[in-house]
Structure formats: C-alpha cells, structure tokens
Length: 64
View 1 (cartoon, rainbow, N blue to C red):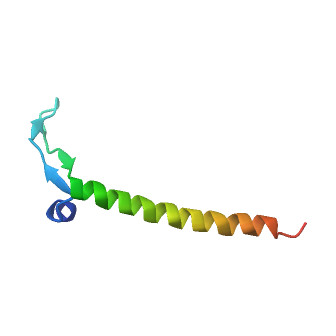
View 2: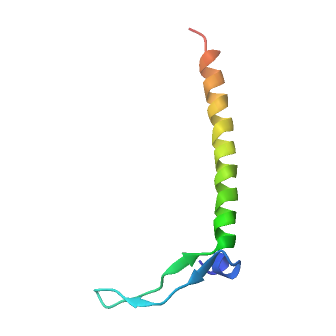
View 3: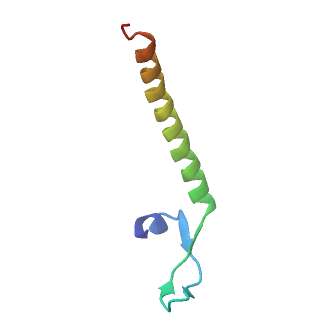
C-alpha cells in the first residue's frame, strides 16, 4: 500500500473506527491510479488472450 500511495495511484481518506473498536484506514483511487489500472488490465487481457490462443491451438492439433 505504501508504494502505490507514494506513486500517486491511491490517496488516504479519513480514518474510521470499526464496530470492533479498531481504527481502519480507507483509500481512494486517483485519476493516475485509474489510468495505471486500465494499462494493467490491458496487459493482463493481452497475456490471457495469448495463453488462450496457445491452448486452443493445441486442442486443434492434438492427436486423436
């Protein structure tokens, strides 16, 4: 959490007390964080699609 907050992807919001008495820190995503998340999702989807293509190609060429 420290690194992504330091990078500007998240900001700390007001601390709140939970029903059990513990202090909770909440975070909010920034616009920079949303852009970074979108880039990560695109990278993940491209990777997943590549793996899926390899697996499907293997099924089509598998011996009977």
